[in-house]
Length: 203
View (spheres, one colour):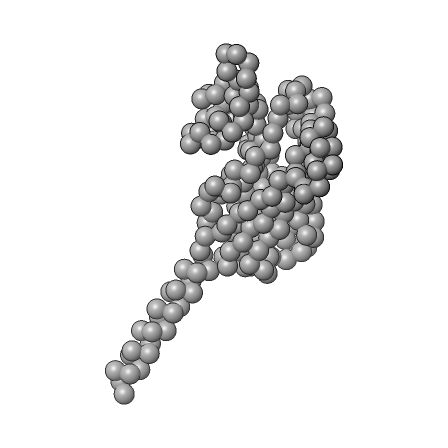
């Protein structure tokens, strides 16, 4: 009888540990660009609007809060860090209760102004940055290629300028998929300005 009790206790310990590991498991970020409507997509491109319909999915999102921080890089150096969304919002709406978090992100440039808005189901937040007077900025869903874990900040989005070669050709994907450290893009590719958006899911 004693051996049966001990065996049952050991089994409960294993199940508890497995449950803890599952609760702290990886989070997957998926993103869909623009719209299925060609006319809307053409208009967005003409107006230099970027749009992502994003979903974060994973059991470890349950009972989590999250933050969004922007980091601006000029001429290869980190020059400014801003909190776009802090944890105080959860005092009003409560922690996330589901295993998924939908997010829509929309950004645009007009002159030197860069506007970006993060839209969640129950709230939204918007921020404006000063950039260069160019329509070459492009929003990239960097987090879809990353392993995302709770309590570990990660770069979800990058608002970048392209790499430009000697002939004047411009390449955005060459930067994004280079495998280089995202914080060194300015130095590696001669990019004058870009903005990283860091997220963190935590207790």
